[in-house]
Structure formats: C-alpha cells, structure tokens
Length: 142
Image (cartoon, one colour):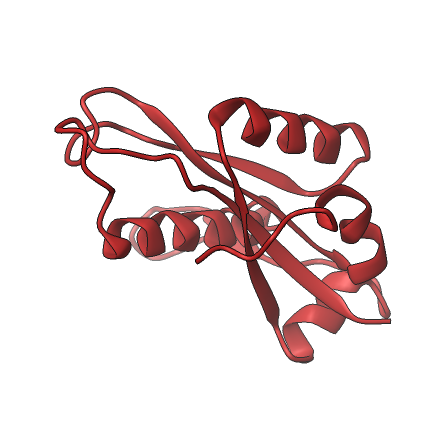
C-alpha cells in the first residue's frame, strides 16, 4: 500500500482587485495545509525546560501506522483542484465524515484578500486507496 497526503486547492481564487492570486501565495497556502496535517498529529507532553516552558511536542504512533509509512517512505504529496468554495466545502465535509485527518486553511485576508478566505484543505496522510474515495475524481492543480 502507498501512503500519501493531499492538498485540495481552489482554482477560482481572485485577490481583492479581481486578479488571479500569485502562484507564490497559492504555494504558501498549500504549505499551510501540509504543515497543518502534521501539526494535528503532534502530541503535547509536559516536559520541564530551563526557561519555564513545559510543553514538548512529539509523534506517537504504533508500528505500521500510515503516518510512519508516509514519513519514512516517499513522503508523497499531491495537489488537486476544485472550482469553488462550495466544492471545497463538499470535499472537506466528506473527508471529515470518513474520519480522515483533515485541515481547512482560511487565509486571514491581510494581503491578497480583503477578508478571510477559504483557500484549500489538507487530507491525510493515509493510504492512497482510502483518500482516492474522496479525491479520486479531482484533477491535478495547474
């Protein structure tokens, strides 16, 4: 079995001036999605530090779990496209309903957008055949 993580990005995004969003901004949003997926899998553990901070983050997963296969394997990341916020919400809700590790990325609206804007979601990492049940119909982002 092959493990992967997926970012589903909106293709209809326009900035507050009505222009296409720069590719760098879209890449950053996708980065937020993949980092968000990993962050959700971190465990908080109290740990004494000399400066008084007492939280340590670490991964805890049983042998053979998909996160291990993904992190220690090819670390496959796929970016797929949807054409609207409604379609993004539909894929997000389906992924949540099926129990996937899922994050919704909403840009704060401080640079390109004039208000908070849903840009993409992250799903996984999980087994490819499971994720494809939610995203298999989507095309690659270009």
